[in-house]
Image (cartoon, rainbow, N blue to C red; front, side, top):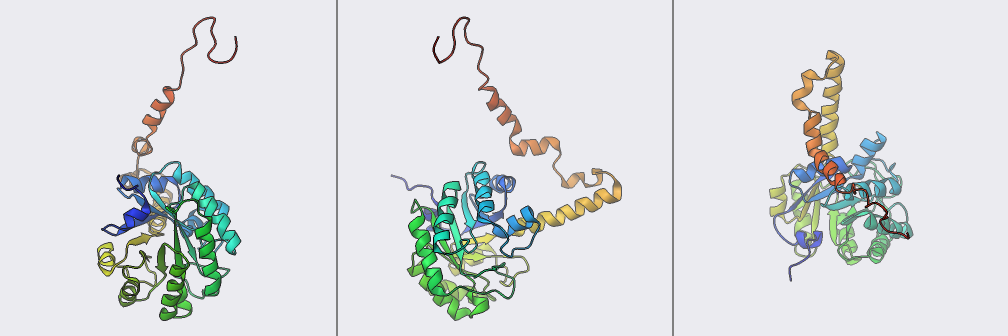
Length: 302
């Protein structure tokens, strides 16, 4: 019998899984059209777009759950979901995992920062004790309904306690039951290589590529060769769209028309093709039942 098409089985095969960042159903749809079968629901991207705020722990669990549910209604991709710190202690983590799993998460990422947390590539982070994070991971593993829902343990210890302590923390998180390990913000290619060498063959490893961040930008093929199973590009879509939006609004302000920008836009018809408008309207028509025969009612009592 063929294996199920799960993220767990995919991570056991080559090449490396490349997961672009998304933040809503539209970006999920566009990523899927580009051929991606795994996407990363970025907490930072939700903060940037939904709140217009930086990634400093302002997004709530309900906002993430609502976002994932809307994405899942439109996309078939494996969804890796950024759940920040789990939004509290181990009991909060249980509820976070249950809610995100029901909403459609394929993997749930929890980090060991303390509150207030911040983007992994910002300075002045702080951590909870490793024992507390171990408890959160155990709670996450116990709370999931399906073993196919993966738990990702992220440590931000490189910037706080140093690289060696980050490896020690990651090893403890693996022992607690984490399915994937994510050592955030290594500062050099050599550190990425050491992460891979340290855990080679033991557990899938995740890397994070942030444009202008603390980790050198390596292509997926090079990370694959080092031994990583998964690479995310979480906020790239927002940086691209924010730059495009700034150019669009500047052009509109200068010209009083969108015509000079048209070559960089979808028009009305092409956007509707992307959205599948015609197919959806046609499907709706199949439910427009004819009038029942005279003297008879469909269903119910006569």
